[in-house]
Amino acid sequence: MEIIIVGAGLGGLTCAIACRRFIPDAHVTVLERAPEAREVGAGIQIPPNGTAVLKQLDLLSRVLERGSVVRHVDFRRYADGRILRSMPFGEDVVEEFGVPWVIIHRQDFHQVLLDEAGRLGVEIRLNAEVTDVVFDAPEVILASGERVAGDVIVGADGLHSRIRDIVLDKPTRPQETGDLAYRATIKRTELEALNDPAIHELCAQTSVTSWLGPDKHSIFYPVRNGEEFNLVLLRPDNLDTGVRRVQGDVEEMTESYTGWDERLTKLISCVSAVTKWKLTHLPQLETWTRGPVALLGDACHPTLPYQAQGAAMAVEDGFALGKLLGLLHTSLQAVSTDEPTISPQSPLHEYILRILEVYEGIRRPRTTRTVQAAVGNRRVFHVPDGVGQVIRDFVLGYAGVTWKSDWTYGLFSGRMKRMLRHDLAGDCEREFKGVVKSLLID
Ligand SMILES: Cc1cc2nc3c(=O)[nH]c(=O)nc-3n(C[C@H](O)[C@H](O)[C@H](O)COP(=O)(O)OP(=O)(O)OC[C@H]3O[C@@H](n4cnc5c(N)ncnc54)[C@H](O)[C@@H]3O)c2cc1C
Image (cartoon, rainbow, N blue to C red; front, side, top):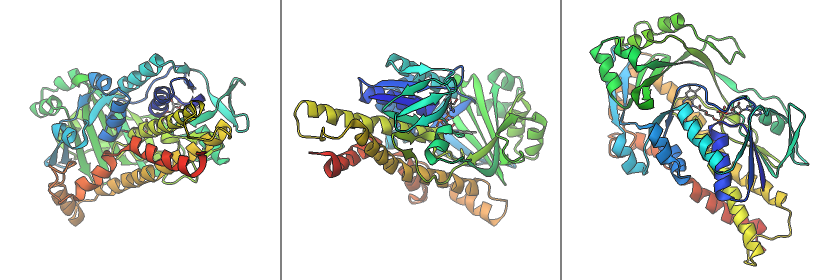
C-alpha cells in the first residue's frame, strides 16, 4: 500500500507512524511544504485521550522523557488571583484514565514523532508543497510540477488546508471565533530575576494555572523541565478580518490585562516577544473524504483551544486511519493464506474508499462534539462579573476532572470522561468487523 500524507504536523506524523506500525510493508511518504519540519509555538498539553494513543504506539515513555505530568490545574479569579479550584491531576488522572495528562514543549513532542517516523522508514520530503490532487490516478501534484502517486492520500495540512478545498471542490475558510491568542514563552531566569515569592511559588509547581475573567482568560505552565514557561492569553479579537497571525505588541498585551492579578501582570512584564493569532474554527464540514482522499486534524476540525484537544484529536485521527488501513491489510493478507475473509475480487481502491468512509463515521461525531464543547468552555470561562460568575465560581469550586475529585455528582467528571477515556482501537475494530460482514466478506 502506498500512503501519501500531506503535512508533517502532529496529526500527519502520528498517521505516518500508525500506518507503518499497522502495515509494516506499506510505503509511507509525508510531503511537507516547509523547508524544515517543526512546530510553531511553545507548550502543548496532551490530555489522556492523546497520551493513550501515544502509549499504544509505544511513544509515551519517550514523550515523558521530554515532558512532565501535570500535578494539578489551578483556576484563579482574574482580579485578585484567588484560587477558585485546585483540581488534582497527577496520580488521580492515571488512576482513572490509565495514562497521565502531560505538558511538553511542542518542538519536543514533534521531535519524538519525527524520530519515530524516521526509525520506521517513513519518507519525509521537505519543500514539497502539494498544490493539487488527481483523484482517478490517484496522485498529488507538487508546486514543482512533480507528481507523486499513492493508494491513499491524507490531507493533514492544517487549518488553512489546500487538500480540504480540493476535497470539497470549493474554497473553504475557517470561521473567525471572535477571539485571539497572544502566545509567548518566558525563561526561568527572567522570572527568577523578579525575586518575587508569589512568582517563585507559581514556577515551583508542575501545574497548569488559568486565570478566568470577563471575555478573557489565560494559561501558564512550565515546559522543558521548568527551564521555560508557556504563557497564552486569550481575549476578544481586534485583528482585521482575514489576518491570521502577526507579531504581537507587548504593550497592547500588557494593557489588555491591566487590573488582573499581580502575579499575571508580573509574568507579562517578563515577556519580550509575543505572537498574536486569530482563533478560527470549523464547527461542521460537509465531508472529510472524497475518493481515496481523507482529511485529518486541523484540516477538518480546527477548534478553539479552550480544552486542549486540537492536537489530541489530530493524533486520534492519525491513529484511527492507520489502524483501519492496518485491519484492511491484515484481512487482505488472510485472503492470500486462504482464510475466509475479504473478497479478493474487488480492487484495493474499492476497499480503501469504504475504509475512509468508516474513518469519517468514527471520527466526525466525536470531533464535532469537541469543537462545540470548546465553544461551550468559552462561555463558561469568559462569563462577565455578576450572578452568572458567582454561580460559575461556586460550581467550579466543587468540580474535578476525575470521579474521585469531582464533588458535583459527576456533572463535570462525567463530561470529561466521555472525552478523555476513549477506546479508539476498539471502535476501529468494531466498525471494521461490521464492514467486513456487510460488504466485503466472501
Ligand atoms: C493558542 C493555541 C493553543 C493550543 N493548545 C493546545 C493544547 O494544549 N493541546 C492540544 O491538543 N491542542 C492545542 N492546540 C491545537 C493544536 O495546536 C492543533 O490542533 C494541532 O497542532 C493541529 O495539528 P495538525 O497536524 O492537524 O496541523 P498542523 O500542525 O497545522 O500541521 C499542518 C502541516 O501541514 C503543512 N502544510 C500545509 N499546507 C501544505 C501543503 N499544501 N503541502 C504540504 N504541506 C503543507 C504545514 O506546513 C504543517 O507542517 C492549540 C492551538 C492554539 C492556537
